[in-house]
Image (cartoon, rainbow, N blue to C red; front, side, top):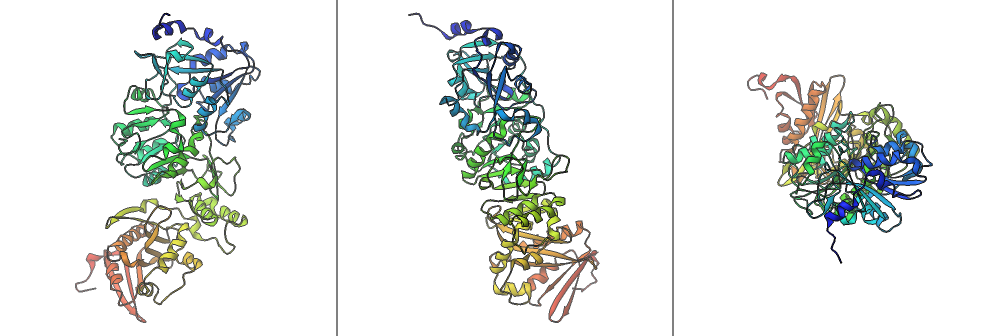
Length: 630
């Protein structure tokens, strides 16, 4: 029996695109390679042969709007083709409406199994590969995702062999023996030079960067203001990547030495993905690069695999979220990519990972600012259940909804909304029973969170976050006061106060970030921190002078925290046009008196009814003190 060598097989399998596609019959189901790896020549030829087919079902992932298959999907040729799109988004956007009946909601990690188990039998698969190497292996290149499963399960495999397709490492290879027909055709791969960013992208990106620690591994969705986030990560160290899509910004961070993949915990030293989407430079970067490995979606997107990483962070964009934390996600008009179909996979994997974080990004309004993306109740299909939601970030701040009750969630979400929509959202929350009847609207609800005040410091090996108070902090502040030493309570309130009702706390620390500002010092995880220090100023409008007050938990006293808080209050007061500070304290409270006198101004001190009143004006510098003046 003569032995067949793969080069002979390859030659025998070569056909033109027309000859290859004549092997497909009407009524069959056909898979087409996705993303920027779409075999354009085969698809264009298929479209040109449309009159030869009837009821041909084309199966694909959502893809570029300018790709041949997407253009075909938008044409009304129902008697020739129907296109089944695997897509987990809400499918309410106008650009998706024409194909809504044929959208199949499914997490992308489950699609390979759908093919391999023949639950959705594929009669043919059109793929694009690199030329074979010396051993007959061809790479699926920049689009491995679900394509490998399609090759392994389809009855007929037609490969467009394109010399411009990169050869990527990992589980991306198909042997010549596993392909039925080869169509050699060189053409440029689909590219995206830049991904559009939202106007608020850089504000959101800075808040995201605060949550990503050195040594973290991250996944970044295409809609998640990627370029801005990657720019914000440029001061991090030893980051890793385990993601569906590699984009140009990731390549840049690798080149800068910021992404090293050194501490991933799995695939150490390797960047793992299933697609590359970007420029021709990116495709050259992944070609034969041993530091980058591509795997199918049932591996890359598998929550169990994602969870094996150390400090795994998933970052994805959503388009709408209600006050309880339910969210919808949608492909954007500029890309159509199925990235939204991977959100749940990565969210659940990151949440199950040690020290993992699942982050959702939401611009507070629509592009023209006319509608709030944070809504009382969902108008679109729910893609992400509220039980899966943890970190949420808008340009107005970051919150952690995990473990929070409905009132806490509603309060947190209102704080992320644009100020012009907050009053309406507050009233709707009360109507829906998400707020206790006694809750009242206050000036604090319209405040814009000043993220620039945030700072992290280390004390005795422990991390302390200094930040402005948020609407969701009332319970933490209560707990701080209840845990204060008796002497510290008297020093702060001038009597032995034993009850700190939530309404009292809200009134005491009503913060609009301009006239009234509270700075907290917290330890512990984001969203679950313990308040160990509080400093606040409250403006006396007639005098344009703000009263300041402080309290520090006993174990943390004497470490300089009150001074840090005072500096931040002072800087904010100057920025907001306040002209001075005043403080009331007991004569024996030497710590408070000493702290106030650290301000670089002339400090006046008077005694009234057994209370020391300290004051200073910001236009009277310390150096103007007369000799001997206290």
